[in-house]
Length: 419
Image (cartoon, rainbow, N blue to C red; front, side):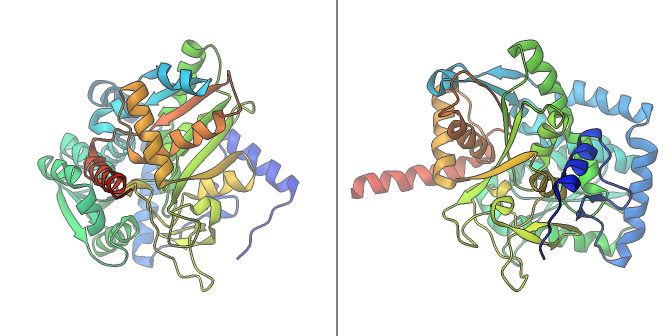
């Protein structure tokens, strides 16, 4: 499948994106998106769409959500001037600190909003999936807050490399279900969560963690995560004296990136750059750079870009960061690439590790490995952009990654001794 648009079509879709007219009634972001789901889920998706129309932007729901975001999550999160990185890079670097939100990442914005929505829709239990564990922790915390039981599916590979977050989910009262099927990472966890939901769509609510899946999830997640970009835009004007020349975010499924980018789409002088997981190489199976190398296809209920072979078989991915280790990407990101409003690049495992260590040394901040990819991309951009303002979406803190980071340190030490 190949998707091509004329310049006139691209311009019109960009206009619609900036104006907030997408997705359309069919859940389409131009040629991407839609609702490709089992017939048994169609009534549940329709109920969710109706519930979003009725509640999401209604005054009492927004009042409740905003009160919880302020009093429980800790919003607004800080915008921090990164003195050390600015001195090293020769640019004015600002960090949007989602690592300071309750549970340690941007995921809580979406999890809380959907948990409150599930409560209003009369759900008796919540099903969720997680890769890096941050969405699982956020879902567990949000469900505890609103009083709904929560089951979290997590790939067995991620259960091992994200053990601290597994323990946190248990402590918060969630059932954590290890998935050994398929690649045993995020894609497999989503598959199993969908199967659970299909088996009980009347009583269950699927709290999807990223801007992926069938309509209305990409829209819903974007709306709940856009608070990141709205806050950052206002803070940049107030604290930095102007909008950023470039804004960076890491991209797996794409929730934190669309949350940062969406309120900035209309600011033509701000470059928007998403950084994917370049893994260990450019070959299929060596990375999770879907927007950089993927092709159109359907995965988890939506038409977007995928990492697949010539026969259309979705391939396993690799990234040192569990949260970026996904074969697809949100359909709105696929559109923003197609119309040229957002540029997508990749950073390798080694580049992410180097950027993480630099951030630790220069700022006293341990970012998540996912976020470290955005730092790597921003540093690359800043190399010949002295004096420019840079905004980085610091999507989460790196405590959860300590087992992986410790293993990397041991490997580096062994290499130095061998040399």
